[in-house]
Length: 549
Image (cartoon, rainbow, N blue to C red; front, side, top):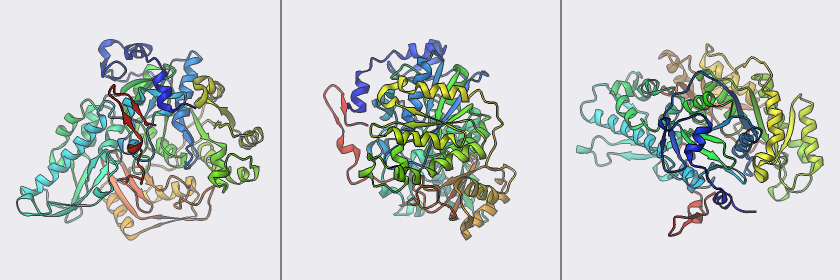
């Protein structure tokens, strides 16, 4: 089969003005970035179309195709004559040149122009990086010239949009003297920065400035939080973000309008595209398809407990993506044997799907459809087994072939999702905002992950107590753990039970408005693999790129 970039190159792209016109946007409401990209300056209206969330089982090394399904589903709605729009995250250069590759879908379900979206795009991540590092510079500058705020420890870190393990921990002002006092610091990848999360949860520029001002940069000797607002940094930071806050408009292979905006990590942050892009899409279309990062235990939980609650959103239906081969992998089958029919392994591994079905339908109460992302090696018996398993839980499981067939391969899924979206329901949450922070953590760990008990390190317990004392107790919690398992152990596949969930550290993200809860060590700056994707890419005299995936 052709590579993703070869398929993308064969598509005749429509001028972005035509795509904007599908949403009723005029020339004065878009800012062109070349022929096929634009920023949308129109503010979200009051109209609200249906919001469809796409999530998945716990990811495996095989890839479940969540973004591909999101794009294929949107194109299926377009083929059915529906006014549909996508709202997805922006790729980060780190994974593009590292190990994961790009984030524009695959096969015949892609957003385009895929090279531009994966490489720099409209410069949003660079602007976020600059705003982040401006704040870092202002902190050190304030300390050098008297430290009137009495900052004792600096918690804010610098950022860059690249995988660079050597910058995880560094010494700043190493020579001392005129440079300032030597102190420890480090870099996070831009997608893991609080400025990224802050922008993605902001409703408008005024809200953005309020949130930027609330970012905690350090602590006094007495443990009092010092914020970017205390430094007076929010206006200058917002100036750097004046264009980045506007959603980006592109298109799918099927000609569906797509907002690609914001890209926070799904462990240290909430893993969703921006609130502004989602609300803009909802106000301009009848159906908006969006997704949340990693599996439903991380992505969907944060989408519902954090993004929906903060932004006043509610999905009309949820799609849970699974593959037969991923379920067999959860059943203990080696990757080399996943193309063989194996109902025993499938029966053992399908409990991972069952856990996510139970969480979404019983904890959150959402209307749910399972999408079986089909591969050529899947047998009729295996597909039927998954469908019968879901049916026994009152959920439809629909075969989806959008990777090979584009929107036409997802029409059956789209029809089932439309039917599910007519269901009236009350969205429930995993915890109440009035719960103490420890209780919120325990409810997520036990209800969603299946933990038997939750333990807190002395450091975490002290930080939670301090957070409550400083008025952050009403924040939701954003739990950072491995994405590969429901448990803290990434090797514990399927549906582990009876485990202990150890909380090791806690960070208040004042700009984002949530408390990050760490289970084990959290990787905020990835490293490159031995053979990075960067070595596989080429560009010729005409600017044609190969090797980008």
